Picture (cartoon, rainbow, N blue to C red):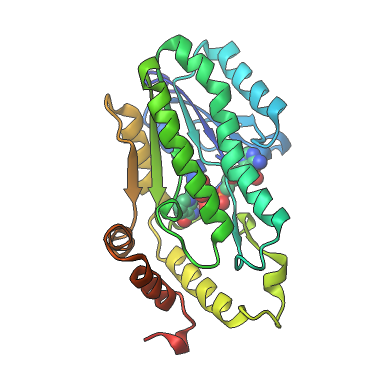
Length: 279
Ligand SMILES: NC(=O)c1ccc[n+]([C@@H]2O[C@H](COP(=O)([O-])OP(=O)(O)OC[C@H]3O[C@@H](n4cnc5c(N)ncnc54)[C@H](OP(=O)(O)O)[C@@H]3O)[C@@H](O)[C@H]2O)c1
């Protein structure tokens, strides 16, 4: 295994982008630990990586994974926080428990992992933290409110982190991918109440889900994002954020930053509307 570029832990590395990132980093010469729950039950790690059982919801699991790496390697140069899942459903119909579950994995899990590596990186006076946000961390997409809230939380938290840790030699980068292919359906949950045919949102919800599924199917290949992560980790001067998205999604992010909110909402509403309502 290549080891020359440093030791990296990638969370959520059993599937989708996390798996692609871990594989790319290993191929590019990083000693790469791939963390996920599945590795406790025999799932195969990404090629070139060392699989590590990791549940970001569990304090003891996070601590054990990091202690294991330090015992073996004596250092940890980078943490890539990818572990997450997505819940679809209107704001009204996503229960408090469903909202909490998304925030606990996506936001609190990321913060937990980061808190565990910070003392090590401070001592080393070196560390790279890459937090997976999303285009949903930049703008809101209808019927993805819980996920969008978690990604906005990651954005704000990471901005504070970057300013607090720079003086200790730590650099923080937010990765903001648009739709990518190969994310697993297993981690896309539909809120319980959104299944009801009598839901007042049913027809709009189905329209939005169709558009979202279409966008995922024509999404970027995961290795494109993985290459961007590898480049950030190799950079002397990593960027604060990197938006990796199709041109139309980049345009949406740009319009979000310049248009009056009400106008932007109308454009998004129409994009995610059921086919017969599209103008
Ligand atoms: N796919 C996209 O289009 C897209 C777009 C923008 C942003 N992103 C972001 O990119 C990252 C990867 O998304 P994806 O869709 O490519 O992946 P995915 O296929 O949905 O896989 C999710 C990963 O998270 C892990 N995970 C979930 N709960 C966990 C927990 N408690 N502890 C540890 N690991 C846990 C899963 O592993 P186990 O079940 O084995 O633990 C799995 O490896 C996420 O942060 C996502 O928000 C994805």
